[in-house]
Length: 307
Image 1 (tube, helix red, strand yellow):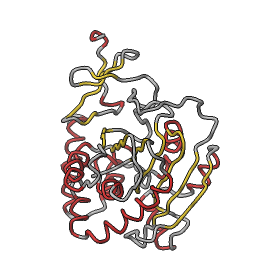
Image 2 (tube, helix red, strand yellow):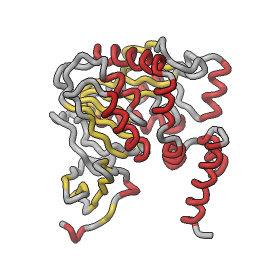
Image 3 (spheres, helix red, strand yellow):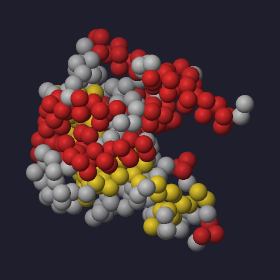
Image 4 (cartoon, helix red, strand yellow):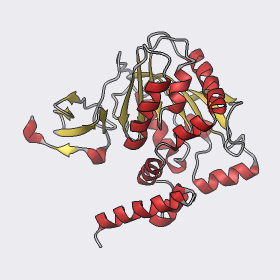
């Protein structure tokens, strides 16, 4: 059996494991003999769960609104009129959509990415049906948070809701990439290992979740200005904290006025080219599937003859 066939077989088996109610990231780590969650494991796990977060919101709208309203209220305190916002690991856009409904600041641009195309596809439908701010258009794209396809210093405010969560071993890499693109501030809503109970810490350790956010930010030259527990977090074994972070001032003096798509993790700009986003500098094309750009390194097509 070829390696390609093995990948398809693994996904088919993973679907069955998910249907049985198994923790899918743990299942995949065992399957691939990985001690931590890789990008591929996270992609498969979340893609298999596409639609589940929307169903969760619909089955308990009160809790979803309490959480999102709290996040939206906090974001409003940190965003200025006319700024740009990026939501990292946006999933099915449930939290972002409901939180934006509470933001009383006019944003010039809102971007959101996830590693799973299926989740974004379902999430855009949720956004269209639940967005009350008709003047806000969310541009979505596929990306790996370790290589964000945006130019350095082109986003004013970066936010997340439990998106860094499963990336325990890659926290430093993720923070460096977030610092690269952020001009002013990160407002991250992520699980707090330090605020958790012993039982919760054991759970987070077993699932490969992040910990030591403040320590890692400081080590990289950033500054955590606030850590505030979120009152309306849904799972007591996975408490949420709001980390307000200023990126290191040494990263770059460049500051763009608007978001610019680039080859992942670089400043090589991408331009629209008939159903693709293209980079003349590198000769790479990235596909756009149903209006969602797929901007991951592994999705690139080398096509120098096009330029």
